[in-house]
Length: 185
Image (cartoon, rainbow, N blue to C red; front, side, top):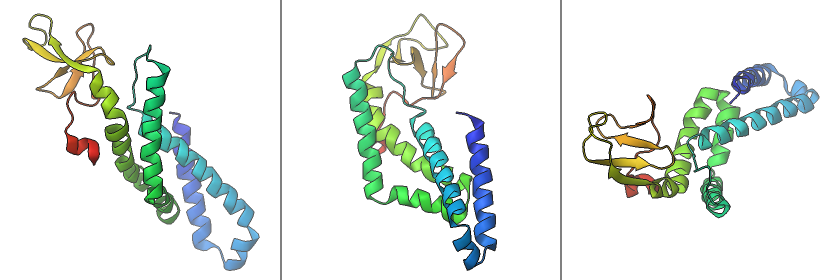
């Protein structure tokens, strides 16, 4: 994601806070259109940040069936709609326009991101993790280990990371097993 979005958000929030904290009632009325444009710019950027942040861990196989991808999309939409119906999106908006803090907004978005990842995406992810035999004594792992078809990597139980046998690479995606509690929280 382009870092300009974050910088612009910081700038817009700082400008809005400065104006709203120092303006008289008459100035609020006089500059209402400009303030509204500034709020809309903040909302547009917040939505971009929100979508990028919530979907950054959603990986699918390159050759995945469109129906499967659509199902993931519908699951994500259901989580977001549920959050909206519970007032979660309004809460995020309030954080932006009451605290003027991008950091507070991103902290609040973490809960929503977890719901998207664990409730909407985890079933797909887990369906592509299976235990298979690891190449002989690879990375100190003997026997079987969890393999992610999506990442083409093995789960290193000791370090809680996914590692590649083909190159020096690792990543910190979801684990191969997720508890029901994590999925339903």
